[in-house]
Image 1 (spheres, rainbow, N blue to C red):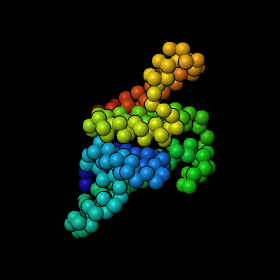
Image 2 (cartoon, rainbow, N blue to C red; image 1 turned 30 degrees about the vertical axis):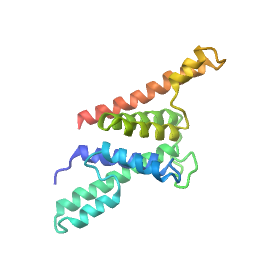
Image 3 (cartoon, rainbow, N blue to C red; image 1 turned 60 degrees about the vertical axis):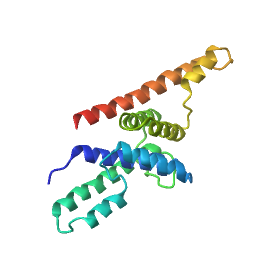
Image 4 (cartoon, helix red, strand yellow; image 1 turned 120 degrees about the horizontal axis):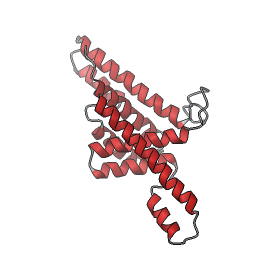
Length: 195
């Protein structure tokens, strides 16, 4: 049995996106959830992302083929790892109570920064592999999950035009958010290049 590292990373990434953006922040908006799932499935081409697709592949293949069972079993494990990473991020390793709290694990003060890096990795991956409309969906969903807007340039320009906003706050958000998202996109690109 030979494992395809790109497929396994796509499974982890796809399950992360589904847990974080679709299940974690979508609520009951079925249309947006479907669109984000479509973007993830397009960006992570070759990945099953959802366990139901993996089980369908297992059950419709040669049930006596051990490689089929092992390869797809590893996909299921990768999907759980991706979902686990999303839950750890969303709950800040158990510090924030949700319906699926990760429990008391450890405290880490840089969770918002890690969330921005994760957003950059997701958006960067979708942007590099999909059409622009799918990137737009990912940006809107990531911004919703982060609880922030996507109008950094708008906010900065507005402050410069004298709307009496806090220019220091607008500038720091514009720069720091951009750098963190850019770092995430860079990390995703480097991982993809090295697989």
